[in-house]
Length: 373
Image 1 (cartoon, rainbow, N blue to C red):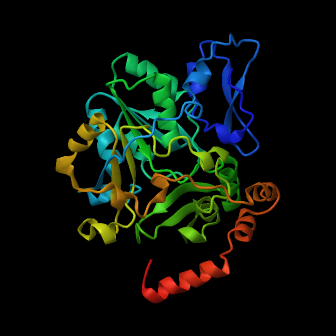
Image 2: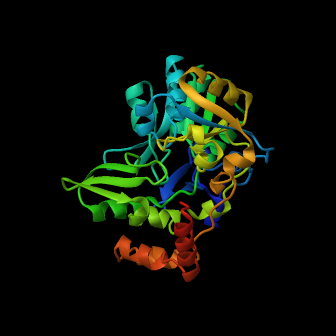
Image 3: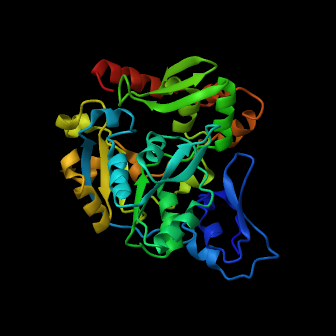
């Protein structure tokens, strides 16, 4: 019977709940809004299936450096509404054309983030763009398992720990499943996200990666109470707190999936593309693609006529994106900040715990003098 006594040892992937033969595990939120398994001990038969599929207890095997590429869709409009180079949308189109389903994260009517299944382009469209809050997987793992058993192709996109949990649940890699992990800095608190929305007002639209002015220096864009709230990313309290690791899930500091065999493909931003491959940089987004399997290689190869792509050494691919291989340590004052957020405005709390040190200010001034971003 799975028992979580140390919250750094649960990533919330739901594999334990999906595998339970007695359906005696439910995912329940803690005070920070993160979901953890709760077991009905009276119904549990002690089979151990939940422990056997946990990606934290059974960490993905470490692998050699995967093949890496810089990739961007030829369709500039598609890239504008994608987080980086539009590769996810092209992969999704191919699975839909094969009669399959795509599972990814969307905002629901209250702008909470959920994983859902889509069967057409209209269903995939809300999956585009970054959503910096841990998603609720609900029962999609069980739905995917049933679809795969019926021979239906499925693309699942999620964080590395989510893809690791799904693959562990399935005890292998079904031929009709394509797993696509997104490079993850961390999974922010759903409760802090709710607080952010409340303080903004009556929110009717959210874009946490607005690229209209720049991909490299993106902005957040909220529509609330009939007005647009457009902010450079580090002027947005929620994003600043997230990027400074102030309210990520406890397990993110000990991520079970960094450097492991957790997906067929990994997608992220190719930060530093202007230095490594300037010909592929138009500041509208270029994807970093890591290929972990033959299935992933074939899926990427099928896009060749719709993308520009260049192979790159792994070291260059991750040089400016440490989140690919390195977990983000929790902010040293995280617990105190989370307590204060119960009663104080988000902006005030984030400002108090993300002030630049004298050394950081000096380094920032030096970068400006040298013309560096």
